[in-house]
Length: 480
Picture 1 (tube, rainbow, N blue to C red):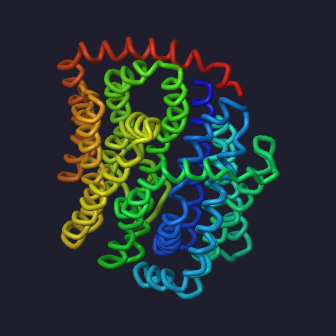
Picture 2: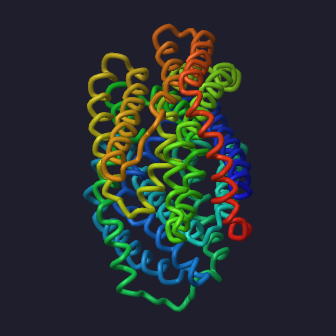
Picture 3: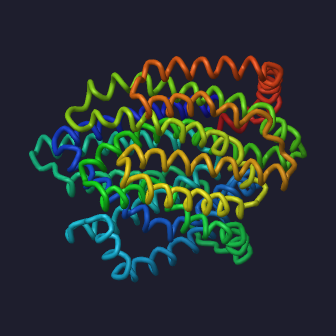
């Protein structure tokens, strides 16, 4: 909890600086200009698919090495030996993929080198962060992420003061900050691995065996993200609409960050509990506690949407007001993401069942691709938002079924826990009456607790026990 509270504080800072940066950019160059920034970052994310597919393996096996030796030398250099040649080969073929991305996202020729630069810098910074996760340094990681966002905000502010802010210079700010943090992060963890390069063929092979099933996930997974949405929006709508959608999506991304942070702590915890022969604690968490956390997260998402309906019009001007309704729809995708991020994903990675991630990516991508194709031409940004919700919903239903038959895990009342957020999104989308949507979500939550009151009580008791046994046993490591 000490680690998570620190991460939450850091995430609040990340969210604050991220929001402030978006506000500055949209205020100075409008939603159309901000859409241009997002288009470059979207292209960069496509490029990163081909180099970041082994990242989670460093966190997975680095934890085991750190527990045994107090260092991450073997895992760090093994992943580096895969990552660097992969990146170099990918850059050598940039002449193939850059023109295609430029066409799909309507990028100017001068933005092409920014796409490559952002991709490489972000990938290196992410590699360092996986090393921090392996060494159980979540506080350091969270703090440095907050500093990164503060640097972006400062850079954008400096460009505005100099009268030189445009879409391309804003992207440069998003490149410079992670570059600085990658260097600082490497210095921060320099004592956790030997600078004498030691590449173990066994370690490389272990990381590859773990990661190869994630290749389809990395490739297909792009089609379930907002970066695919950006391509559809640019094809059917315009850059201004992309800016509006990106504002709402970033707000939703801030919501998702909180369970994502918890999931980053649960992976090493699950690995440690499995190694210590306490796998039943993990099972109890997934079956009894996770539905309760999902319901609480869904209500938190509705609360955030209620606040943002006043906050967004107050802060943003003009076309950006349309982000309110889009955000109300997207909160259902945040609710659907909760059990995966703080339960199913860390569990399957701890069990080395990485092929499940590829299955989920395939399902989510097909649904998102089809829904965008059919909904955006007819309903615009509202259709795009619902495509995202449908993709997340399909993914979580499939993973529940897989875990039920593969690992005999029962979902209990996880699916009903989504109802409050889904009710609010549907009603808001259909009527635009956001106050009534909030009241309906609260009423739905009350009914769910009433129907599953025994399971709710069991979840609360299990949560107390899980905290005292599982988290309590990690106190000494949490202080590191």
